Length: 450
Figure 1 (tube, rainbow, N blue to C red):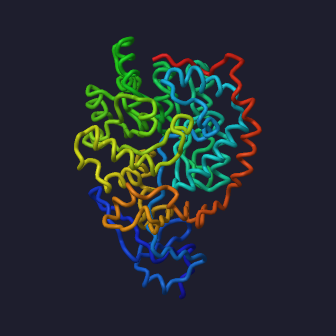
Figure 2: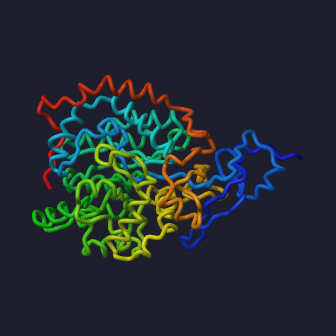
């Protein structure tokens, strides 16, 4: 019997591979066989010539990588890109961002999410973890455009019990949505905006419903020191005493994680991960960065992220990968840490593990979902190639991504987006800007006071 055609075969590429010891390698002149959205095999290009497929991509001279994962962002905030510049954190929140966010409509969230997905797909991001408001609109955009997402409806204690209930209802309603491309999480904002009672209730709901939790904690050193001064505990100790560390938790930023917090994270009974978005920390002039090396030594995965474009100005995970490597070298005083291969591991498999998808995506291997990007290294800025990992991390750019594939579906081919009309989205957002940016009402959705 003649075997049925594969859905997609990508030929004549170099494929990034992972071993069982967090090592990175490259298989040259390889082919990837995809069937029903899953990687069926990675074989030689010569072997692939004998196979039939519904669709073939000749990726000669290109590098096939697992799609990048943006482990923490606020996708709709691309609408606020550049409106709050050169400000300390407190003024950024209180004087600009939280007043403007009080104007957001569900349509604004939808338009912002659509533009963000376009940016991420063009930059080789195939999955993003989003933590925001009106998340039904974000889920609809994910369903429509074909990307993968890990979504949570954020809430503050100032919203009363309704905020927490909406977060749970969203998570249960959309879990497994978009043909399995959507996973969900509970999303309390942070220990400084969500009280202990709400955090403990969230931990209980997470256990009851088998849901993870995604929140900001110890974002910066000031938050950790303020929490110690006011309450005698660090934000990480708050997570422990409220039971959140007994379940699966994704901690955004963590640049304020102190030495006293490390044994707590090490001994936590839940699966703990941290998302690091280094560009924003530099921009806010925070004195410390995510302690990637210390967390690595504890076996805690650190995923790469961008945060929202209102603070980071970009959803470029490629840049986060390069900055993570450079900042770690600088802060540790060790040019051997992080290596380019370690950075690639953070950007792929560790980031997938951070959002709970380490057995689903993050590597190009049989049984994994076919979330794949093809990177062109023929430009003058990437030639010659002496060390392929170093070229990818320190020379290549997100604009070198030629093709982006999620679940075996091509979302961008040769830099052309196939599912999002970017000019139309930009026009929609442009029409909303005067009303969206109006701060004359004097309102804000929350007070930043840590």
